[in-house]
Image (cartoon, rainbow, N blue to C red; front, side, top):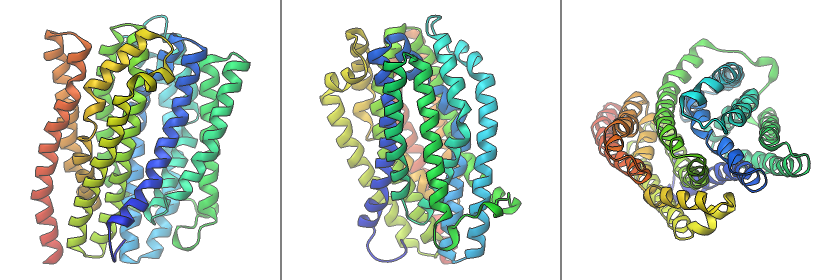
Amino acid sequence: MLHGSLADKIVMFALPLAASSILQQLFNAADVAVVGRFAGNQALAAVGGNSSVINLLVNLFVGFSVGANVVIARYIGEGKEEKIQKTVHTVIALALICGVILSVIGNAAAAPILSLMNTPEEVLPLATVYLKIYFGGMPFFMLYNFGSAILRSVGDTQKPLYCLIVSGIINVGLNLILVIVFHLGVVGVAIATVTANGVSAAMVLLFLGRSAGAIRMDVRKLALDREEAVKIVKIGAPAGLQGMVFSFSNVCIQSAINGFGTDAIAGSAAALNYEFFTFFVTSAFTQAAVTFASQNYGAGSYERCVKVWRISTALAMCGTGLLSFCFTAGHSFFLGIFAADAAAVSYGAVRMFHIQIFSFLPPVYEVTGGVLRGIGYSMTPAVLTMFGSCAVRIIWIYTVFAWRPSLEVLFWVYPFSWVITIILVVGAYFIIGRKAFRKMNG
């Protein structure tokens, strides 16, 4: 990461990471497809409509894994092996703590949050059961994500992919057996997901335990080092808070969608899967930007940090733009995979033509924010993104959407908020970047 060409290395880093995330979403999408095809629109709405709630509660803690990636990558750039060892064991301990906290919060908050979101009465019981079982497996989910962050910090994005291939096959197999054979519906899908997360967590820990060098994990050394934990939280909390507030705005939007009925929820949930696919391409290049910028900043290389930003942004925009075009052009086929009902498919098409087609925009502010985090400025992109992509959306719901309450008007908030966020974050990059690199050279 510190020498030679960048574009090929960024692609080699990002592609397995994008494949891992897309694969993970494909297996999660299998939950939606199986219940949509074999358990009806209510089950589809119960599972698919829960994503905004899950992200609301999970994103704060997942943000800490970004902090772990940055801290370890910087120590690698500085050559501090003892610090790397302490941080690795702190990260795993932190993952367990976060997982337990999330299990408790998720089970306690599931029903109240879903009720506040205007979830239809016929969907509410199924959605609540799904959430409670899902959050019961949060320790597994956290261990996989934090363990993967450790592997990414040294450029290894392939092992997390192997974990997801195995766990994903298990997830799909259990979905089919528990839903089609045993008729467990939403409960069966939730059990399959938790089991698959447990397998992926176990495999990541196994890889870390057998790793060579400073990132090797020893269960006997697990401990929460205060100094390293503070550094991780200091960088990761703003990213997590950004994700949490971002998810809150999506919860508000989901609440508005819920007001249009079960078919609208089901169609929106089907289309949302494809937005996840394009976002994961963005996220992969963002993680690449964070890791490459962190190591090069730690090594004192100004020019390479700037190149990382330019190359990662261009590649992310091209990748997401191509995917978005394919999904939108073939919307009838892609939506039909998840929803058998024509009304749900028509609602999904509305979402695709107002949101999916513009998915090439978020890479600009996401990658830029990733570079800023990589050089140690985590709060600024978090605050700006929270305003541009969150506050703007909430204001839109209570003004523009309240004036013209239609799904089309509701969905237009996404591209509008993306443009606002791009202006804010890119502007901050040029101001802060110059200051940071001047300090590095001075």
